[in-house]
Length: 82
Image (cartoon, rainbow, N blue to C red; front, side):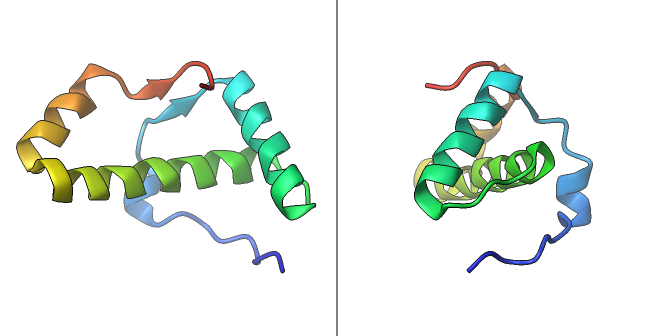
C-alpha cells in the first residue's frame, strides 16, 4: 500500500543535496519495478534524500561523527546512478 505524500521535515527541506535527472529516473524505474506504482520526480527526490540521511546516521554510528563530516564536505551531489 502506498503511503500518502508526506512533506520532508524542516531540517531536510533546507538541505542542498542534488540528484541528477538520470539518478531520479533510475530510482523511479526501480521503485515502479519493486512496488508497481509510479512516483513523481519530487517523491523520488524526497525518498533519495531520506535514504542519504539514513546512511549518514548509520555512518555516524559506525565511523564516528568526525569521519562522516569529512566525507560530507567532499561532495553533496549524486551525479549519476551506480
